[in-house]
Image (cartoon, rainbow, N blue to C red; front, side, top):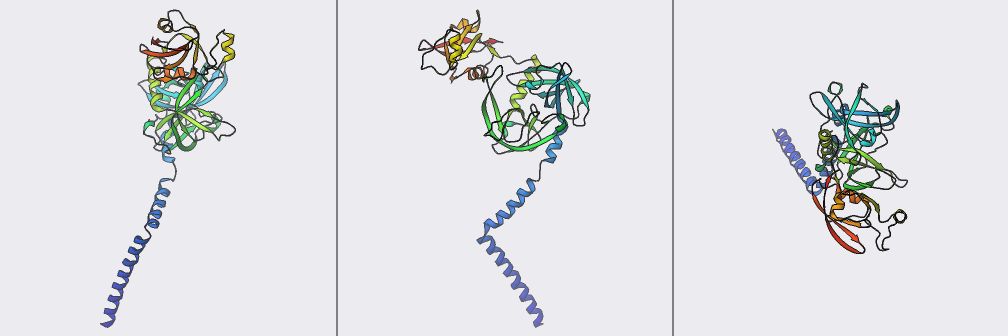
Length: 358
């Protein structure tokens, strides 16, 4: 009987001692417990993005463009919509520009030829169509506006051509609402794009491909990349909301309707070109857009804009060059009336311009 009592007492004491020790650890070392749990959670959630890649990969295609039976460029696109007869592929304008034939290659190596519904060089968006029966999958679209800086994203594309199709790279959202100057018609920047920034590797051939969130939903279209000797590489993508708006306009009208004022322009900083045109500015004027010519009967002509005027504001926004002027102007719709401020012989004048469609 004494032995039994001793066993029971020993068991109870051991239990109480264990409770006391655990309580002491939790009380005096709470961070160690939290750290251990947190590390396990990170380990579980950071195992990879394979399932998300599987969700989108069959909707991603290689876009090869030909002219006179010669391959001139390779890019990426993705199937984003269908109707009763066709499937629609979104890609970049610069991928399909100046071509006479477009070949699509799917994830299973089957091929199809695509027609161009329409495209826009400023938006850098093109919409292609293929027979609906040829596609493998349709991408799910997400919302770029829901993303936060630091969120994980990934791309699928064809860097360096079709041999590397289906290449996946992962990174984060490094920035949102970046205003990036690009050249559309020459060497100098003449347009500004509002884009998202990512550090996911984007190489030649990735253009037009999807930028996806961790759920495999498309939240942007890879469009351009800044690469300098001192920079590892910064990728940019058009937010999917903007891309869809452009694509819908292209499908409805074949193009994107933008406001038109009817002028030819030079940057105020282009002193040599201005001198060639016989226009001299005050030395203090280093920014703005200089009017070189005005079309008869155009909105600019009707508003009283004159040769030599320097546009310094559109609405409430200052403009430093042609790129900013176009960016601000194209934020309005045709048929709207806007205020443009010009510097004329050292005096500021406010002019009302009734926009028309281009």
